[in-house]
Length: 460
Image (cartoon, rainbow, N blue to C red; front, top):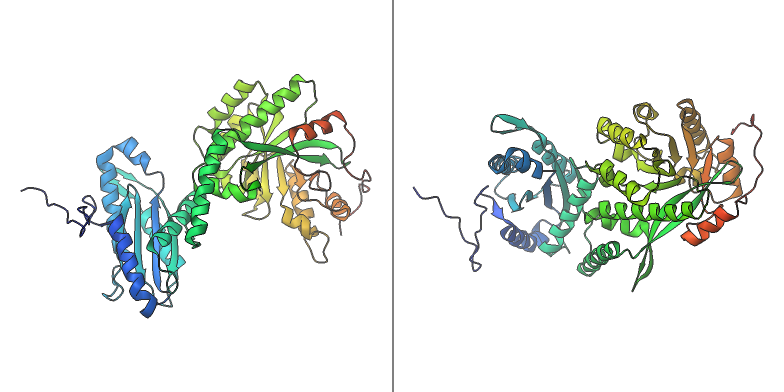
């Protein structure tokens, strides 16, 4: 018998259902969301749940097991997403659609007692169960973005775009999780996408700017730099990294940006070395997405070979989130780079998982105490005991401790008393262009008060 032909969407000439999974197509799903919003804004205000689902690293299934296995997995995903809503009433009318490729979406009306986050994590859990693709059992995960729509929210396209952005954010955290979407006005969303386009061009045309922030030892002598990046936008002026790093992560540009920063840093180090400067170690931030790339080691070594900079000139700053995704794989990548002299610092220490116990499994040299703790260190009942405890435990494991965000002499005195080995912050210098950083290399003067507490001074 001939295969059944998919139904056509009214007036479009396009199929209304996906021939592989039987789910509604993306265009039909968007139309159904819009129709539901029209009724929901009057009767079910704020109850419409919309989720966008992206399968993590699904391309590996097609590459390793073939497209037939990939198709079986997609059909099984569709069945599971449908089963999540089993038992829903006709009034709830849940809808599941295949948006395209390995991306799905679903919507349903939730009761006031239901948690959209729990619903989303239920989807994550359901899709994480093993799949049977031929003789093999495989496991894949999903990244979910979700939001509750209603009332003044009346544009399906904006809703789906926001949910898709939240799913991308979930993927940037390693996948296998869900994030709530932030619905932004259409004009703001358009500006955001324009910025992403401009950023992509800026990276590829090398229009970004490197900034070097000094790091000092306990005597406030220059002991290194952290490399930061800024963007001189032709219309908007100077944009700091805190503004556009999130754009780079959401748009998939972060690895390209990180590689550009590393290459430009090495080119600058090569210039300083050829000029005869005794350059201290330079710290470069490596994003979780960049760090998780299987070809990270090869790309880094290629840049070192290209620029002639030795690995011992660099320190990579990575976050706990980057290394704890798969600690054994992380340790392997770090050891491979460490063999070439690159050292490692755990950045923003204290704001995430923060179990010092995991550090013995990783070739880490330094922990950087997050600036939020430095800012609280001078307050009564503040963070001084915690910073001191981190320093003591880190020293017991042979690690150095850097205090970020030091801005006053009082904070300097207290982080010294807490036994921090190095400091960084506006008290010693703001992020500055290479020419100004070079002046610091030429004139090795103290960058702050030289007074140091006695060795037996106690922090409290």
